[in-house]
Length: 439
Image (cartoon, rainbow, N blue to C red):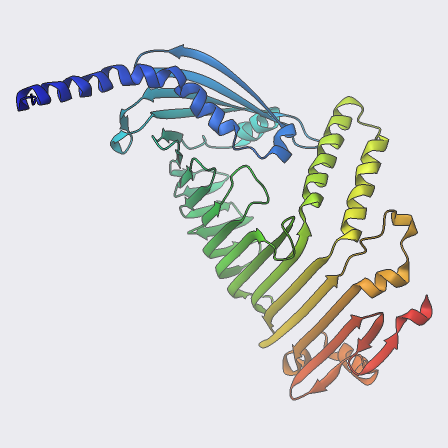
Protein backbone atom coordinates (compact mmCIF):
# COMPACT_ATOMS: atom_id res chain seq x y z
CA UNK A 1 0.00 0.00 0.00
CA UNK A 2 1.47 3.34 -1.04
CA UNK A 3 1.68 6.16 1.47
CA UNK A 4 -0.58 9.09 0.70
CA UNK A 5 0.95 12.48 -0.16
CA UNK A 6 -0.16 14.06 3.16
CA UNK A 7 1.62 11.29 5.09
CA UNK A 8 4.79 11.75 3.03
CA UNK A 9 4.70 15.49 3.62
CA UNK A 10 4.15 14.94 7.34
CA UNK A 11 7.06 12.46 7.53
CA UNK A 12 9.32 14.86 5.64
CA UNK A 13 8.32 17.69 7.96
CA UNK A 14 9.05 15.55 11.03
CA UNK A 15 12.46 14.61 9.59
CA UNK A 16 13.35 18.23 8.87
CA UNK A 17 12.23 19.23 12.38
CA UNK A 18 14.40 16.52 13.91
CA UNK A 19 17.39 17.62 11.86
CA UNK A 20 16.93 21.26 12.80
CA UNK A 21 16.10 20.47 16.44
CA UNK A 22 18.55 17.66 17.21
CA UNK A 23 21.21 18.55 14.64
CA UNK A 24 22.76 21.42 16.62
CA UNK A 25 23.16 19.23 19.72
CA UNK A 26 24.69 16.35 17.75
CA UNK A 27 27.04 18.71 15.95
CA UNK A 28 27.86 20.58 19.15
CA UNK A 29 29.08 17.37 20.83
CA UNK A 30 32.18 17.36 18.64
CA UNK A 31 32.34 20.65 16.81
CA UNK A 32 34.52 22.51 19.32
CA UNK A 33 37.15 19.77 19.17
CA UNK A 34 36.86 19.66 15.37
CA UNK A 35 37.26 23.39 14.80
CA UNK A 36 40.12 24.04 17.21
CA UNK A 37 41.95 20.75 16.60
CA UNK A 38 41.74 21.43 12.88
CA UNK A 39 43.53 24.75 13.40
CA UNK A 40 46.26 23.09 15.45
CA UNK A 41 46.74 20.45 12.72
CA UNK A 42 47.63 23.19 10.24
CA UNK A 43 50.99 23.87 11.92
CA UNK A 44 53.83 22.13 10.01
CA UNK A 45 55.49 19.39 12.04
CA UNK A 46 58.92 21.00 11.59
CA UNK A 47 57.84 24.16 13.43
CA UNK A 48 55.60 22.65 16.10
CA UNK A 49 58.44 22.68 18.64
CA UNK A 50 58.14 26.48 18.66
CA UNK A 51 54.42 26.35 19.46
CA UNK A 52 52.52 25.30 22.54
CA UNK A 53 48.74 24.83 22.46
CA UNK A 54 46.28 24.84 25.30
CA UNK A 55 42.53 24.38 24.93
CA UNK A 56 39.90 25.01 27.56
CA UNK A 57 36.14 24.69 27.25
CA UNK A 58 34.15 27.63 28.61
CA UNK A 59 30.64 26.39 28.00
CA UNK A 60 28.68 24.04 25.76
CA UNK A 61 24.99 24.30 24.95
CA UNK A 62 22.44 22.91 22.56
CA UNK A 63 22.71 25.58 19.88
CA UNK A 64 26.00 27.23 20.80
CA UNK A 65 29.24 26.75 22.67
CA UNK A 66 32.39 28.66 23.41
CA UNK A 67 36.02 27.79 23.92
CA UNK A 68 39.47 29.24 24.33
CA UNK A 69 42.58 28.28 22.37
CA UNK A 70 45.87 29.71 23.58
CA UNK A 71 48.84 29.49 21.22
CA UNK A 72 52.25 30.29 22.69
CA UNK A 73 54.97 30.96 20.12
CA UNK A 74 58.61 31.09 21.18
CA UNK A 75 60.89 32.51 18.47
CA UNK A 76 64.53 31.47 18.59
CA UNK A 77 66.36 33.73 21.05
CA UNK A 78 63.26 35.82 21.87
CA UNK A 79 60.59 35.94 24.55
CA UNK A 80 57.42 33.94 24.11
CA UNK A 81 54.32 35.50 22.56
CA UNK A 82 50.92 34.18 23.65
CA UNK A 83 47.94 34.51 21.32
CA UNK A 84 44.53 33.83 22.84
CA UNK A 85 41.65 32.97 20.52
CA UNK A 86 38.20 33.00 22.10
CA UNK A 87 35.60 31.09 20.06
CA UNK A 88 31.86 31.78 20.16
CA UNK A 89 30.50 28.86 18.14
CA UNK A 90 27.04 28.49 16.63
CA UNK A 91 26.06 24.91 15.80
CA UNK A 92 24.66 23.95 12.38
CA UNK A 93 23.08 22.90 10.17
CA UNK A 94 21.46 26.36 9.69
CA UNK A 95 23.85 29.17 10.53
CA UNK A 96 23.45 32.90 10.80
CA UNK A 97 26.71 34.38 9.55
CA UNK A 98 27.99 37.88 8.80
CA UNK A 99 27.10 37.18 5.13
CA UNK A 100 23.59 35.89 5.84
CA UNK A 101 22.14 32.42 6.40
CA UNK A 102 24.35 29.49 5.40
CA UNK A 103 24.38 25.72 5.83
CA UNK A 104 27.31 24.06 7.56
CA UNK A 105 28.59 22.30 10.65
CA UNK A 106 29.41 25.43 12.64
CA UNK A 107 30.11 29.12 12.51
CA UNK A 108 32.41 30.85 14.95
CA UNK A 109 33.31 34.41 15.72
CA UNK A 110 36.86 34.62 17.05
CA UNK A 111 38.17 37.29 19.39
CA UNK A 112 41.98 37.41 19.43
CA UNK A 113 44.23 38.96 22.05
CA UNK A 114 48.02 39.02 22.42
CA UNK A 115 49.95 38.66 25.67
CA UNK A 116 53.48 39.97 25.14
CA UNK A 117 55.48 42.58 27.05
CA UNK A 118 57.15 43.79 23.84
CA UNK A 119 53.78 44.09 22.09
CA UNK A 120 52.30 45.98 25.03
CA UNK A 121 55.19 48.46 24.93
CA UNK A 122 54.67 49.09 21.23
CA UNK A 123 50.94 49.60 21.70
CA UNK A 124 51.52 51.96 24.61
CA UNK A 125 53.68 54.22 22.43
CA UNK A 126 51.11 54.51 19.64
CA UNK A 127 49.33 57.87 19.55
CA UNK A 128 46.11 56.17 18.35
CA UNK A 129 44.09 53.07 19.15
CA UNK A 130 44.51 49.95 17.06
CA UNK A 131 41.72 49.44 14.51
CA UNK A 132 39.00 46.91 15.26
CA UNK A 133 39.80 43.33 14.25
CA UNK A 134 37.10 40.78 13.49
CA UNK A 135 37.54 37.09 12.63
CA UNK A 136 35.00 34.48 11.58
CA UNK A 137 35.26 30.79 10.77
CA UNK A 138 32.82 28.57 8.88
CA UNK A 139 33.10 24.78 9.12
CA UNK A 140 31.44 23.10 6.15
CA UNK A 141 29.80 19.70 5.85
CA UNK A 142 32.71 18.67 3.62
CA UNK A 143 35.07 19.25 6.60
CA UNK A 144 36.47 22.41 5.04
CA UNK A 145 37.29 25.49 7.06
CA UNK A 146 36.99 29.05 5.82
CA UNK A 147 38.48 31.85 7.91
CA UNK A 148 37.75 35.49 7.28
CA UNK A 149 39.61 38.39 8.86
CA UNK A 150 38.78 42.08 8.65
CA UNK A 151 40.62 45.08 10.07
CA UNK A 152 38.63 48.30 10.07
CA UNK A 153 39.78 51.53 8.45
CA UNK A 154 41.70 54.00 10.60
CA UNK A 155 42.36 57.70 10.35
CA UNK A 156 44.56 59.73 12.67
CA UNK A 157 45.83 63.28 12.66
CA UNK A 158 47.86 64.76 15.47
CA UNK A 159 50.96 66.64 16.45
CA UNK A 160 53.19 63.63 15.64
CA UNK A 161 51.85 62.99 12.15
CA UNK A 162 48.97 61.59 10.13
CA UNK A 163 47.77 58.12 9.20
CA UNK A 164 45.10 56.96 6.79
CA UNK A 165 44.61 53.18 6.62
CA UNK A 166 42.07 51.72 4.19
CA UNK A 167 41.51 48.50 6.13
CA UNK A 168 42.34 44.86 5.45
CA UNK A 169 40.41 41.85 4.20
CA UNK A 170 41.77 38.32 4.48
CA UNK A 171 40.30 34.98 3.48
CA UNK A 172 41.65 31.46 4.02
CA UNK A 173 39.99 28.31 2.65
CA UNK A 174 41.31 25.02 4.00
CA UNK A 175 39.91 21.90 2.37
CA UNK A 176 39.52 18.48 3.96
CA UNK A 177 42.64 17.22 2.14
CA UNK A 178 44.69 20.06 3.73
CA UNK A 179 45.02 21.97 0.45
CA UNK A 180 44.49 25.67 1.06
CA UNK A 181 44.05 29.06 -0.58
CA UNK A 182 44.88 32.40 1.03
CA UNK A 183 43.96 35.90 -0.14
CA UNK A 184 44.81 39.21 1.51
CA UNK A 185 43.95 42.71 0.30
CA UNK A 186 45.17 45.82 2.11
CA UNK A 187 43.60 49.21 1.53
CA UNK A 188 45.58 52.33 0.80
CA UNK A 189 48.10 53.35 3.46
CA UNK A 190 49.13 57.00 3.71
CA UNK A 191 51.40 57.69 6.68
CA UNK A 192 53.53 60.65 7.63
CA UNK A 193 55.59 61.79 10.58
CA UNK A 194 55.93 65.53 10.87
CA UNK A 195 59.13 66.68 9.22
CA UNK A 196 60.71 63.23 8.80
CA UNK A 197 58.72 60.71 6.77
CA UNK A 198 55.85 60.36 4.31
CA UNK A 199 54.96 57.14 2.50
CA UNK A 200 52.02 55.93 0.42
CA UNK A 201 51.34 52.26 -0.33
CA UNK A 202 48.34 51.58 -2.56
CA UNK A 203 46.76 48.22 -3.43
CA UNK A 204 48.96 45.72 -1.57
CA UNK A 205 47.70 42.22 -2.31
CA UNK A 206 48.89 38.75 -1.34
CA UNK A 207 47.66 35.47 -2.82
CA UNK A 208 48.86 31.93 -2.30
CA UNK A 209 47.83 28.31 -2.50
CA UNK A 210 49.36 25.05 -1.33
CA UNK A 211 48.58 21.39 -1.85
CA UNK A 212 49.31 20.58 1.81
CA UNK A 213 48.89 23.27 4.45
CA UNK A 214 50.97 21.56 7.13
CA UNK A 215 53.84 20.58 4.82
CA UNK A 216 56.47 23.25 4.19
CA UNK A 217 57.73 21.44 1.09
CA UNK A 218 54.39 20.71 -0.55
CA UNK A 219 53.86 22.21 -4.04
CA UNK A 220 52.80 25.80 -3.46
CA UNK A 221 52.66 29.26 -4.99
CA UNK A 222 52.64 32.74 -3.47
CA UNK A 223 52.62 36.26 -4.89
CA UNK A 224 52.85 39.64 -3.18
CA UNK A 225 52.10 42.65 -5.38
CA UNK A 226 52.09 46.41 -4.77
CA UNK A 227 50.80 48.45 -7.72
CA UNK A 228 52.13 51.73 -6.36
CA UNK A 229 54.40 53.00 -3.59
CA UNK A 230 55.83 56.45 -3.14
CA UNK A 231 57.59 58.67 -0.63
CA UNK A 232 58.66 62.30 -0.54
CA UNK A 233 60.63 62.14 2.73
CA UNK A 234 63.26 61.27 3.78
CA UNK A 235 63.97 60.13 0.18
CA UNK A 236 61.76 61.13 -2.73
CA UNK A 237 60.88 58.18 -4.94
CA UNK A 238 58.01 56.29 -6.51
CA UNK A 239 57.72 52.77 -7.90
CA UNK A 240 55.01 50.89 -9.77
CA UNK A 241 54.13 47.22 -10.25
CA UNK A 242 56.31 45.75 -7.51
CA UNK A 243 55.98 42.01 -7.02
CA UNK A 244 57.55 39.09 -5.21
CA UNK A 245 56.63 35.62 -6.47
CA UNK A 246 57.63 32.23 -5.12
CA UNK A 247 56.75 28.63 -5.90
CA UNK A 248 57.79 25.17 -4.76
CA UNK A 249 57.32 22.08 -6.90
CA UNK A 250 58.47 18.48 -7.03
CA UNK A 251 61.75 18.01 -8.89
CA UNK A 252 62.29 15.68 -11.81
CA UNK A 253 65.58 14.66 -10.13
CA UNK A 254 63.82 12.36 -7.64
CA UNK A 255 60.98 11.95 -5.15
CA UNK A 256 63.01 13.42 -2.30
CA UNK A 257 64.02 16.49 -4.32
CA UNK A 258 62.26 19.82 -4.73
CA UNK A 259 62.65 22.86 -6.98
CA UNK A 260 62.17 26.40 -5.68
CA UNK A 261 61.82 29.59 -7.71
CA UNK A 262 61.66 33.19 -6.54
CA UNK A 263 61.10 36.32 -8.60
CA UNK A 264 61.31 39.96 -7.61
CA UNK A 265 60.56 42.84 -9.92
CA UNK A 266 59.89 46.57 -10.09
CA UNK A 267 58.43 47.71 -13.39
CA UNK A 268 59.28 51.42 -13.08
CA UNK A 269 61.27 53.46 -10.56
CA UNK A 270 61.39 57.23 -10.35
CA UNK A 271 63.95 58.74 -7.97
CA UNK A 272 67.25 60.57 -7.73
CA UNK A 273 68.99 57.24 -8.21
CA UNK A 274 69.85 56.16 -11.79
CA UNK A 275 67.90 52.88 -11.51
CA UNK A 276 64.72 52.85 -13.65
CA UNK A 277 63.65 49.17 -13.41
CA UNK A 278 64.85 45.95 -11.80
CA UNK A 279 64.11 42.22 -11.87
CA UNK A 280 65.72 39.20 -10.21
CA UNK A 281 64.87 35.59 -11.00
CA UNK A 282 66.40 32.98 -8.71
CA UNK A 283 66.09 29.18 -8.88
CA UNK A 284 67.26 26.45 -6.53
CA UNK A 285 66.68 23.05 -8.12
CA UNK A 286 67.25 19.45 -7.03
CA UNK A 287 67.29 20.48 -3.37
CA UNK A 288 67.29 17.49 -1.03
CA UNK A 289 64.32 17.58 1.36
CA UNK A 290 66.47 16.12 4.15
CA UNK A 291 68.23 19.48 4.35
CA UNK A 292 64.96 21.06 5.45
CA UNK A 293 64.11 18.42 8.04
CA UNK A 294 67.66 18.55 9.39
CA UNK A 295 67.60 22.35 9.50
CA UNK A 296 64.42 22.44 11.60
CA UNK A 297 65.79 19.68 13.82
CA UNK A 298 68.81 21.88 14.38
CA UNK A 299 66.59 24.84 15.24
CA UNK A 300 64.60 22.72 17.69
CA UNK A 301 67.76 21.44 19.38
CA UNK A 302 69.18 24.97 19.51
CA UNK A 303 66.01 26.40 21.01
CA UNK A 304 65.91 23.68 23.64
CA UNK A 305 69.57 24.22 24.48
CA UNK A 306 69.20 27.99 24.73
CA UNK A 307 66.23 27.58 27.07
CA UNK A 308 68.08 25.26 29.45
CA UNK A 309 71.64 26.62 29.13
CA UNK A 310 71.87 29.79 27.01
CA UNK A 311 75.66 30.05 27.16
CA UNK A 312 76.54 26.56 25.93
CA UNK A 313 76.00 24.52 22.78
CA UNK A 314 75.89 20.76 22.96
CA UNK A 315 77.83 18.34 20.81
CA UNK A 316 74.52 17.31 19.28
CA UNK A 317 74.19 20.70 17.58
CA UNK A 318 77.64 20.32 16.05
CA UNK A 319 76.74 16.81 14.95
CA UNK A 320 73.55 17.95 13.22
CA UNK A 321 75.44 20.77 11.51
CA UNK A 322 78.00 18.31 10.17
CA UNK A 323 75.24 15.98 8.98
CA UNK A 324 73.63 18.83 7.04
CA UNK A 325 76.99 19.68 5.47
CA UNK A 326 77.52 16.07 4.38
CA UNK A 327 74.00 15.87 2.89
CA UNK A 328 74.67 19.08 0.93
CA UNK A 329 77.99 17.73 -0.38
CA UNK A 330 76.62 14.31 -1.28
CA UNK A 331 73.64 15.51 -3.30
CA UNK A 332 73.37 17.53 -6.49
CA UNK A 333 72.16 21.13 -6.49
CA UNK A 334 71.43 23.70 -9.19
CA UNK A 335 71.48 27.41 -8.37
CA UNK A 336 70.54 29.92 -11.10
CA UNK A 337 70.30 33.70 -10.88
CA UNK A 338 69.30 36.16 -13.59
CA UNK A 339 69.34 39.88 -12.80
CA UNK A 340 68.12 42.52 -15.25
CA UNK A 341 68.14 46.26 -14.68
CA UNK A 342 67.80 49.53 -16.50
CA UNK A 343 70.31 52.04 -15.10
CA UNK A 344 71.77 55.22 -16.56
CA UNK A 345 69.32 54.78 -19.47
CA UNK A 346 70.79 51.44 -20.48
CA UNK A 347 69.77 47.78 -20.11
CA UNK A 348 72.10 45.45 -18.23
CA UNK A 349 71.99 41.79 -17.19
CA UNK A 350 73.93 39.30 -15.07
CA UNK A 351 73.31 35.57 -15.54
CA UNK A 352 74.94 33.22 -13.02
CA UNK A 353 74.39 29.43 -13.14
CA UNK A 354 75.94 27.05 -10.64
CA UNK A 355 75.60 23.29 -10.76
CA UNK A 356 76.95 21.06 -8.02
CA UNK A 357 77.07 17.46 -9.23
CA UNK A 358 77.40 16.01 -5.74
CA UNK A 359 79.92 13.71 -4.10
CA UNK A 360 77.82 10.68 -3.06
CA UNK A 361 80.77 8.76 -1.57
CA UNK A 362 81.87 11.44 0.90
CA UNK A 363 81.13 10.70 4.55
CA UNK A 364 83.36 13.24 6.27
CA UNK A 365 83.78 16.93 5.45
CA UNK A 366 87.41 16.90 6.57
CA UNK A 367 88.24 14.21 4.00
CA UNK A 368 86.89 16.17 1.05
CA UNK A 369 89.30 16.21 -1.90
CA UNK A 370 89.53 19.68 -3.51
CA UNK A 371 90.24 18.28 -6.98
CA UNK A 372 87.19 16.01 -6.81
CA UNK A 373 85.10 18.94 -5.59
CA UNK A 374 86.21 21.05 -8.56
CA UNK A 375 85.27 18.21 -10.92
CA UNK A 376 81.77 18.17 -9.39
CA UNK A 377 81.33 21.93 -9.77
CA UNK A 378 80.17 23.71 -12.95
CA UNK A 379 79.71 27.49 -13.15
CA UNK A 380 78.78 29.83 -15.99
CA UNK A 381 78.70 33.61 -15.67
CA UNK A 382 77.60 36.11 -18.31
CA UNK A 383 77.64 39.88 -17.75
CA UNK A 384 76.14 42.10 -20.43
CA UNK A 385 76.31 45.88 -19.92
CA UNK A 386 75.30 48.85 -22.06
CA UNK A 387 78.53 50.70 -22.96
CA UNK A 388 76.94 54.15 -23.35
CA UNK A 389 75.23 53.85 -19.98
CA UNK A 390 78.44 52.71 -18.27
CA UNK A 391 80.37 55.61 -19.82
CA UNK A 392 77.90 58.04 -18.25
CA UNK A 393 78.17 56.41 -14.82
CA UNK A 394 80.78 56.63 -12.03
CA UNK A 395 82.23 53.35 -13.38
CA UNK A 396 83.40 55.00 -16.62
CA UNK A 397 86.99 55.42 -15.51
CA UNK A 398 87.27 51.90 -14.11
CA UNK A 399 86.19 49.86 -17.15
CA UNK A 400 89.02 50.44 -19.65
CA UNK A 401 91.82 48.78 -17.59
CA UNK A 402 89.74 45.58 -17.35
CA UNK A 403 89.08 45.73 -21.09
CA UNK A 404 92.79 46.15 -21.76
CA UNK A 405 93.60 43.13 -19.57
CA UNK A 406 91.03 40.98 -21.39
CA UNK A 407 88.70 40.50 -18.43
CA UNK A 408 85.98 42.44 -20.28
CA UNK A 409 85.18 42.57 -24.00
CA UNK A 410 83.80 45.72 -25.63
CA UNK A 411 81.99 45.79 -28.98
CA UNK A 412 78.71 46.70 -30.70
CA UNK A 413 77.87 49.09 -27.89
CA UNK A 414 78.06 46.36 -25.22
CA UNK A 415 80.52 45.36 -22.51
CA UNK A 416 80.64 41.58 -22.05
CA UNK A 417 82.17 39.08 -19.71
CA UNK A 418 81.76 35.35 -20.26
CA UNK A 419 83.25 32.95 -17.77
CA UNK A 420 82.83 29.27 -16.99
CA UNK A 421 84.22 26.53 -14.80
CA UNK A 422 83.81 23.04 -16.21
CA UNK A 423 85.76 19.85 -15.44
CA UNK A 424 88.30 21.87 -13.38
CA UNK A 425 88.95 24.19 -16.35
CA UNK A 426 88.36 27.93 -15.92
CA UNK A 427 87.50 29.87 -19.07
CA UNK A 428 87.35 33.66 -18.99
CA UNK A 429 86.24 35.07 -22.35
CA UNK A 430 88.73 33.26 -24.65
CA UNK A 431 91.41 32.49 -22.06
CA UNK A 432 91.58 28.93 -20.68
CA UNK A 433 93.19 28.12 -17.31
CA UNK A 434 93.30 24.46 -16.09
CA UNK A 435 92.87 24.61 -12.32
CA UNK A 436 93.96 21.06 -11.66
CA UNK A 437 97.59 22.12 -11.92
CA UNK A 438 97.23 24.06 -8.67
CA UNK A 439 96.07 21.06 -6.59
